[in-house]
Length: 346
Ligand SMILES: Cc1ncc(COP(=O)(O)O)c(C=O)c1O
Image (cartoon, rainbow, N blue to C red; front, side):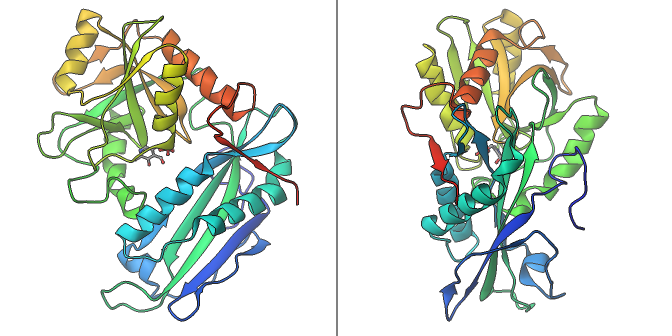
């Protein structure tokens, strides 16, 4: 399918794509910028059959000064290499990843007008493109970068409700939960459908061993707020190896400290979440990610009974963290850590 005009998330792409190939003999080719379009595909392509496919998601924003900037792309380049290594794929050097991202933003970033509140979502992908059905790592790979404009996965004012999955897991110890491989996502669709049937927007994943500890919500990181609004404890589960080391999660921990809160990394059990909401100790919860930005979580649906977080409305700590994040991304707030990676016009 080629690009179509649509408001749906990720179905209408910009005019170009960047492509590079890797072979055992020659390593990586120079990335080429091509018109966005279909690719030839061999029916025995390894990526299609055995899932040797990794991807990333990052965004570029139009700043207050009119320039374009990528948000922390170095982190995505590093995670992309980490994902590739785990699936026995060649690592794309960070400079090639960053060059490709800059090139696509420079070419197609004009789709973001001055003062545009939307962003350009970039999707880097690497797949095993060798045609061969032997069960072993492929000897040919394709790197691809495409982009689309988005206003966010959820609307600005939206709060979501979540449904707790007790029987299906997203990740297991020793598995691939800490990387972004294609195979992590389709197995979540059935649980996501069940969440929708329960009237919820997202699934909450528990750890697969004890089915007790909260890990993530859908394809997002989760945060909990204790106390507040001045000087809250902003809590997120620790990265045990089954959670994705999310760039937004790391950014929120830093911004929480900047806003005078105490960032806390610790395991939170489902039972604690319920009890602390009942006692009022836990005042807010939110999910976050590149696509979701920061989205309040206000209701929890569980087989053991439902509960409401705080007063059931988006809370002040969540709202101020969201504003702080979006303001840094659009150059409206100081960027002391150098998260913005300016893209020069080419
Ligand atoms: C499973 C999972 N958790 C969390 C996130 C959020 O990560 P990030 O903030 O790097 O987008 C994502 C999205 O990439 C994800 O797929």
